[in-house]
Length: 145
Image (cartoon, one colour):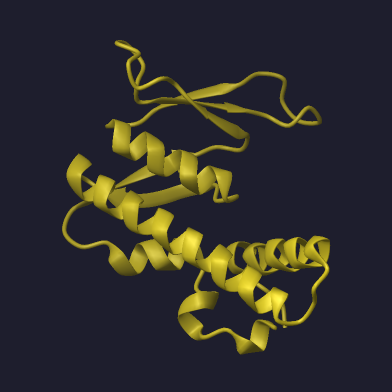
């Protein structure tokens, strides 16, 4: 099924983001851990993401304050998809919000396309979900040849 995908569908989120960055950017760090975004109405930490580590690793959550709410939401979206490390994002909040919207649309489109492709090969819904998850993993982590 991987071979049935076009190059744009196989593009990793990091490469996809890099291709859409124009103008001034800022580097942000996305540490290991499951992301938990503070409430948008939190007066003091609406831009803070707590990254809660896996039980087998460090025992303390890491709190990262991002430049804006849009930056924090994009960092959560990327972290939820398994993206970690230093990532370049737009400098402005409005450009980041636009990119976040595009990213969410892309990921939803990929999930739909992968499920549709898997569904054309099997009627077993559990297998469809497994194949969809595997294809998404390959896009994010890279598929070895």
